[in-house]
Image (cartoon, rainbow over all chains, first blue to last red; front, side, top):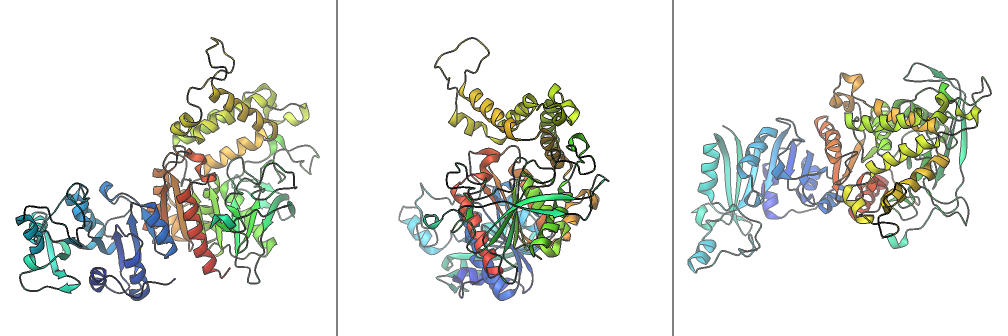
Amino acid sequence: MSAPASLRPDLQMIADWVTPRSSVLDLGCGEGDLLAWLQAHKQVSAYGVDFDVNNVVRCVAANVNAIQGDLEAGLAEFEDQRFDHVVLSQTIQAMHNTEQILLEMLRVGREAIVTFPNFGYWENRWQILKGRMPVSDDMPYQWYNTPNIHWCMLGDFDALCAKNGLRVVERVVMTGGRRVHFLPNLRGSLAFYRVTRG
Amino acid sequence: MSSNASSVGIVSAQRALFDTPLPLAGGTVLPSYELVFETYGQLNAAGSNAILICHALSGHHHVAGRYSEDDKAAGWWDNMIGPGKPIDTNRFFVVGLNNLGGCHGSTGPSSLDPASGQPWGSRFPVVTVPDWVTAQARLADRLGVERWAAVIGGSLGGMQALQWAIDYPDRVANALVIASAPKLSAQNIAFNDVARQAIITDPDFCGGDFYAQGTIPRRGLRLARMLGHITYLSDDGMGEKFGRMLRSGEYKFGYDVEFEIESYLRYQGDKFSDYFDANTYLLMTKALDYFDPAKDYGGDLVAALQRATASFMVASFTSDWRFSPERSRETVKALIAAGKRVAYAEIESVHGHDAFLMTDEPYMNLMRAYLQRVAKEVAA
């Protein structure tokens, strides 16, 4: 089955962290782009979870194992430590049970890869200073219709990990598809974390 | 896509006689038996494009098409199977059969026992899902099908698809298990037993040997079907279709048919008791009750599924309470734990258990997407 030749830059960043021939669970897998790419290029064994039946249908067409399910209800379908990597891409900020899903990810997998729009990005701060809630390419919603209910910045996510005794193995921050090294919490629009149990 | 879909057209049933004795799970041996079946589409030269359709409790071999130009009713899954339909007969060779113990032409309780020349009746052995699968495998041999591209079934049919993947791992490439369960719950067995009691306690049942008496336990069959039918629909679906509608518009303060739902259920019950065999009903419900592929593996479904090499598609329907999504998720969980390839969809539907026979759009899309993938795999 044909896999996408190139991935969106943020998905490519995640893909780079995935070990060849490992097992991967992608939470909120959408149409299965990341997993199809990983299956084709890194020979992973993979499952995706998505809430939307239409996405499950597209995953089926893309030869990706998709399980329809609600992440808010936990990951009961998966046994402890079943996966090498568990991915949650730009979804954690839209979840009610933020802390629970993070812990569930590390129950079913050895490493959690979590990405989220960084609320501390300077353009967001600037819009707030101007008196409005931030709207951008990474967060294209108005305050009244946004699915994103749990905003955080790098420091907040670090604190959540520390509170639960989790170890941040690696952190990358990007803007417009390019990595940001200097003043990441100010200059980075998208955050990428690799987290393990302490 | 569906605008190009059409019917398989005029079809006819075929018969296959098997005289190799079939040992049954219950310990008896069926010396010989006949299976009635239909096929649609062409088996390719490699023999790789065959799909087996397994029927549920009251189903049979007439899955698609019509028997004559003026045949009013098409086969029971005609919406799913045909040229350009999700199970596309332009690409696949599709086989439907009537299971052993059935009452639509395959050897069953109403057939004549060659030893006595009398209908089998109460002496027909109880057969199980694994027995059916063994009989189906022999039919596959006869048809020149070494490995099914897919085995597909809803409800009791889904149980057969799952059993196939376990019992004949090399002979199933894909198993589609729809609105099914890895075993029945106590509540589900309870419904089956009420249905059986309705039949068995009908005086016309005569202990199962009513054929010789020239009677039919119609009242029992009718009640069994009415009860079953309630459990195949959802509360919402029934409410939408019938609500509290009255046939005459006002209460009659009596016990005749008043509400539309009563009329509907009685009609369904009557119709069913005209053509369905009481002993077959008992047998089919027993096959449901006994189904538990994990039993031979210390109750461990993951261990049972470890043998399978097939890819799986599991689907359930939100309003199905007879085979609820939770039950399908048990199968999915075990498949994931066993490291099997699986897709799972929980289809939004008001049609209850019957939804597997309906045409809810996401369901049709899912089936189409999955089977297009199968077609590519087997170069159909």
